[in-house]
Image (cartoon, rainbow, N blue to C red; front, side, top):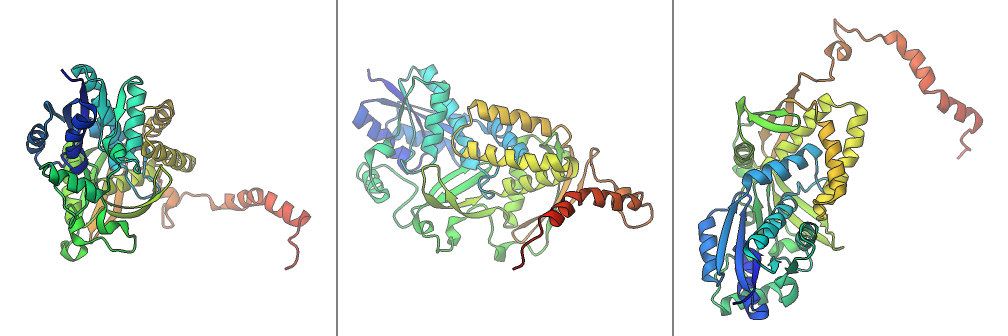
Length: 400
């Protein structure tokens, strides 16, 4: 009896080819593991396909709740957005998949785990490093990194082995989907001058097709976690899905990004992330209301570091745990409601309220009821400007 390997199986091109290749190259029996992190149309069809391709077992795990609760919402609390544009949908799913690969390998007595990542992408790092952090002695195989086939050659291999694939050379998009976002790569998108064609998008309508009237949402938060939509309390998966559907109808959530990959190359990345865009905007708007200026400034630095760690595959590290502890502390008073307007591809914050708001109307208003003591301003300005005046007197600027 052959040894076993657990393959992270999506049903796409590379992992479908990998089932056959792993048996040919390593003489390993393949256990296909499909992790449901949302927005996968037919999981049973994917499971059957894995068995048809030669897997000895095909497992499907519904991890949507765990994905949202343990990965997405902590990143939302951190305001983690890579390079200011990418909400980290795929990057957040990979440590969860790695965790389940390790657990399944231990349960099934497998000697190795495998994935379909290439040697040019970020996901190989995320999965390999996460597996190493959780099970340092477990062997990792990356067929697409080893076989060194072009995409066209991989398609040809699949066709020669009667492996059904969801793409062709005429429509060669590589897709990754989860509740938090959809990544679209390859094909015409590899030229950053090309506008993404209409068929690249699935979740978001073009501006020409969006409704003529805006939609409004009221999102309730408790300690930085979204808990309600328009006054109705919802579990995380349902809340994200509902925002996803409505925001996509209004064309919200498209990202076209020249991204700096961990492996040192620039890549043109196209994403659809309707729920992520809306919830990140809403969460930051609520933080603006309840966090002090110094907290906001320092948290922005933490957010960038948190995003980089996540993007770079370092989720299961002490550094991320340390940052997460700080983030959790900042969320103690991030409770309240944010009103959002969705219209023609835009997500606009139009209202926010919180029992812990630091906004004081009596201090901010210029009308009746103003309690700000303006007579204190001259003395404050004198002290504040003292070092400026001192330096200007002693070190006058040279004439130009």
